[in-house]
Length: 611
Image 1: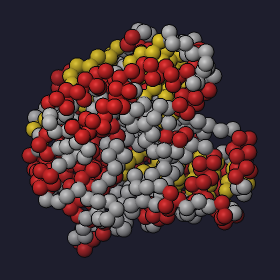
Image 2: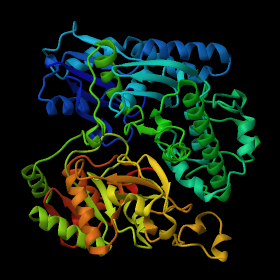
Image 3: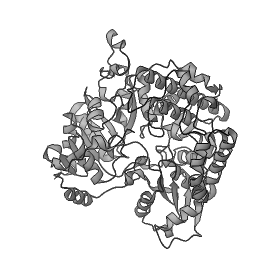
Image 4: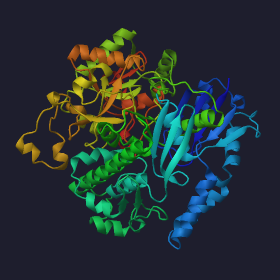
């Protein structure tokens, strides 16, 4: 039995994964254990978990692989500072001490950290370093259901590359083309995330959710700062940006072009201007991704596309690529950001370097991305008793029946079952669920449970067999990475008066038979559910359909604003008791809010900062 430990760390979304004979056994982000969102530290807890789950001591692991090459990254930083000198001295002087002290000697740093897991771990053990974009590409291709594919990776920046095209065939993968820093689609999108007043590296999906409230009236101005070629390749005019050498993303020239300073989230509300900016950058991003997809299909003639990198989490752009029918099939890595780099690095080592044979799973090899922690019924009950929780334990069929009944009565439910998801999306294991037919569910969940902006859309989880009856989509979307429109017959047309409304005023208009998961542009970020990948979730939605005729539930991640998705029964109980969730279903236990000791409540509204 050969085993590989993959690690990503030290930038954002640290994670660990473990393979046994090339099979993905376990993977998790460090943030779930430390409760620090996007935790970038060495993933000690995540490594401990994957080793335990694989029943291995670290000294028994054959190889350890890190997701990028620190020397190449250091070279890029140095060359960037030289190219932009004398600008950027402040950020240079802040970055260098850490690099000289730790990051340049990452192999030594890693060994010293690894030793803490197992005193028998020896320094002569193999520690390998993958390349950042190769790790991304490998994470997308090797678990995919394709023997052959073209892989498009787009993110902020790795060592030098920001966008790459690779070809994968059987057990081999080779990067063919690269766009290099500072020209980056990920950093462009992050620059606008910063400009609108959201957090870089966490608020990008908010920008995507805000876009449908606006009109892309700044598209031409954005194109003044991008040299955009017909094939989708691009260069960014660095006169408008500050990220290469500064401590901010944009500069005064950028502000002057668009006519406002960056929004201060503590003092300024989101206005129609910000919505229009969001709509404009989203449209440009979609155009770039579609043009890149078209050009690589034409050049390589391969019918399958794999996507990875942070930009691959832009499910609206993914949906547009699918709708254009550029490729016959598309598969997107669910942990498309840096966390997935731990998995990709391990897979690259197993297949490319060690030349092991690959057999393709016709679905995919991600096990529904349910690769994290799980708890036995005994462990759950023990934790709940220790916390002072009041709960009832039901048989499985009773639990499904009762939960479906509560959902149909428009109760907000915390749902904690099976193994935790790997990646940024809750997929029915650590989810908050609601009735999509409710007019108020979206607003109430945002304001009363998640404590976040009311405009944020929610996703529908739908039985796979009912998908095309409700949405203009008929391909699997198990990882909530495709956006599609609701079917015409399920829509509710707006009145002439409603059509005249602007911005957030559009929020409360009922647009379909499932308004809680229908965005202002009639779109939804869809998760398809099958019995094979998540039996309890499938059974629950089936029972809800039996009661209501609706094969859809609202699914949002089980957390509040600024907090990572819950990991343990204790995390779940704290979130349940501290918010306006009505019920918590955890394992076979059901908890009613009205029966809890409310002195156990924590003030969630103030605990976490804006994300």
